[in-house]
Amino acid sequence: DSRVRSKINKAKIESELLESNSLLKVQKRERLQELEEGIANATTRGDLKTAKKLERQKNSLMEAISKL
Image (cartoon, rainbow, N blue to C red; front, side, top):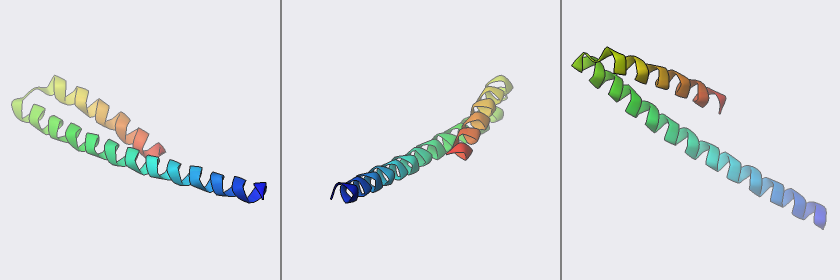
């Protein structure tokens, strides 16, 4: 029946979207960790300009993650 096939296809697509969304979240969290390490390193070096730049990137990334 075409309705059953349609429901199966829709379920597959939804499953794939959830999977890719989860992968995206993992990648963004890894990037977030990299930014936090960069901020710590820049702060340790006394490079406040870079630290502030990385902090802004981190904040926008956190906002993007919260919308996923």
